[in-house]
Amino acid sequence: MAYEYSKGWFIQQLKAAGISYHPIEKRKLELYKTYILRRLYDDLQKRDKS
Image (cartoon, rainbow, N blue to C red; front, top):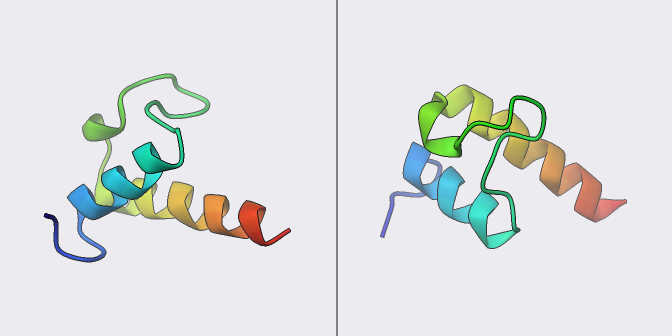
């Protein structure tokens, strides 16, 4: 279990949504810093609301 809004938490949320790789760079999510994962998660949330 990861702390909410930690790097591990963002990775869990993105993988649960079916995203395992960065959409543009095609590298594993674990290689990115937290702020990049947070942006991907925010984009995912905005897309789901639309």
